[in-house]
Image 1 (cartoon, rainbow, N blue to C red):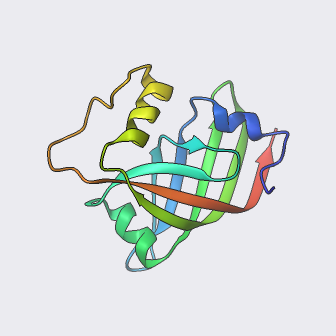
Image 2 (cartoon, rainbow, N blue to C red; image 1 turned 60 degrees about the horizontal axis):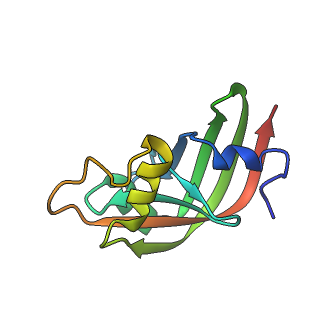
Length: 130
């Protein structure tokens, strides 16, 4: 398992992951997201109109930087590949993230017409600090 046992606890916290992808002209694109961890894969939600969604379809290499919210000098960087893009028509995943991050049963910012997917990342390399 590429996630070191010393830092796996960060993945269960209310930490944000800054996810970097490669844009259409080779430029990096990075923004923070809520994420879930199932013990082997990292998942995050996107709408199908977002640049990040288009980026991972063109090039599935990603990097995630996750600071420990209890100690910002402790972090986990995960490099990986997008293994799957799963449809989330009933919003089950984003609702689970609203529960984790906001304590709400439903994601409050859903807009009519938004199509959500779950980006599934297979970790291939990690770097840690702290």
